[in-house]
Amino acid sequence: MHSYDYLLLLAFFALVLLPAPWLGRFYYNVMEGQSTWLSPLLRPIERGCYRLAGVKPAQEHNWKQYTFALLAFNLAGGALLFAVLLLQGSLPLNPQHLPGQEWSLALNTAVSFMTNTNWQAYSGEASLSYLSQMLGLTVQNFVSAATGLAVLVALCRGIARRSTTQLGNFWVDLTRATLYGLLPLCLVLALLLVWQGVPQTFADYANAITLQGAEQTIPLGPAASQIAIKQLGTNGGGFFGVNSAHPFENPTAWSNLFEVASIILIPVALVFTFGHYVKDLRQSRAILACMLALFLIGGATALWTEQQPNPALDNPQVQLGAPLEGKESRFGTTGSVLWTVTTTAASNGSVNAMHDSLNPLTGMVAMVNMMVGEVIFGGVGAGLYGMLLFVLIAVFLAGLMIGRTPEYLGKKLQAREVQLLVATLLVMPVGVLVLGAIAASLPGPAAAVSNPGPHGFSQLLYAYTSGTANNGSAFAGFGANTVFHNLMIALAMLIGRFGYILPVLALAGSLAAKNSAPQGLNSFPTHGPLFTSLLLMTILLAGGLTFLPTLALGPIAEHLSLGF
Image (cartoon, rainbow, N blue to C red):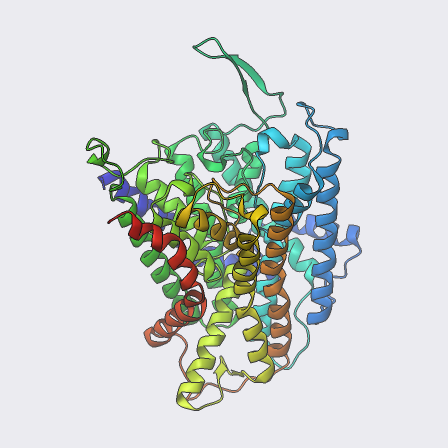
């Protein structure tokens, strides 16, 4: 590694960690309707949105009403996007006259963006019009991220409130999350990206003559606005097919730094938002310490293995440095690995290198980041409510070990809460192991794998892991655009999204109804190094060991076959 590699890592952590406490407090104030520096500008717009939609902001929902509103909104948004993609050829802002998507691909894409997954079995510049990119994908990028933030806030209220059935108003939370939480940051990032050379235009694709005399079509479009929300909203879907490896999406080292830091900026800030809800920032620091520990363990492993030359390559000139297959030379190995670990630690899925070309253990780190439920930082809202589920599981395990009724911040965890927690533990195994096993066992779907042996199995395993974890990245060699995989991965994405959201909202309602007992000397502390270590082990054991046999058949077997 060179000095600029260390500077990149230092700048990345500085951009993420330094503003997080301030931004976390800002999100708490926004979601609770308190005055902020943006209120004079945005409060009239917020009130106008409520009047237009007929929303009564003072009227709160119980968990069932909150859930119904969330499901109705997401279903309507998914149906609208599905219609736009099918009818694209007849709609305006389509300078290339691109036809509508095939129905199974359109359904897969609609589900993908509705669930904040942004799995793409197509190339954006060759398949989607400007209208589809803006009205369809960009809008869903905003509201799917806002939905995750709303669910997190409902859970935070459930933990913090006492003896109530009210969790807030979903429509208010969705509006505030979008208007205050996402739009201002996206505007800033979009302007920075335009400054760095990312296109933002409605012009037709440009035609050029190469030095060899061949004709080339250069795709353009309103890219910067979508790229900003795809990163800040932990969505990840690229405007262009190769995502942030494309020079129009990620042209410079500065744009690379801005984009990779923005992937986890809001998820880290929301950890501090939780601390403000429970009036104890020590809880935030304990959770953040666990997230950082997991991130550094995975990042160090991936960086070390990706710096190793591949022993399968006999050419001694190739062995002089780290392999650069599938990587952009302008970002190098460290920049590619940092992005790989960050995008899979968050439910982002954008890439600046081809994961299919990673060394086996680096690919395994990316998969493990997703298999644990993407709780290391996770998506906007989704990562932290997933982590809080593991917090409650760790508290339950601690209660079993010491023979006491488990409680978290004064709220006792009883049979109903434990049943809901167990239900969430089944989400990833069902989506990855059950659906993945069906896909691997049928000869037709298995033909989507382009490599024989362990690497081919890793391609399929990664696809279903990415879909269920609502990540959206992929090993590039997997041919996912078939009717079977479009439908099965769409099902995996739905399971991965709503298989967590429904129990989380039910859990929030159950906890909100409980009275809170005062913390005493005999209470188990949930803010020190002991609890952080217990939480880390719970995540690795409950979230990681489930998938060890499949990892042994895929990336571990491939690593051993290389003769390291």
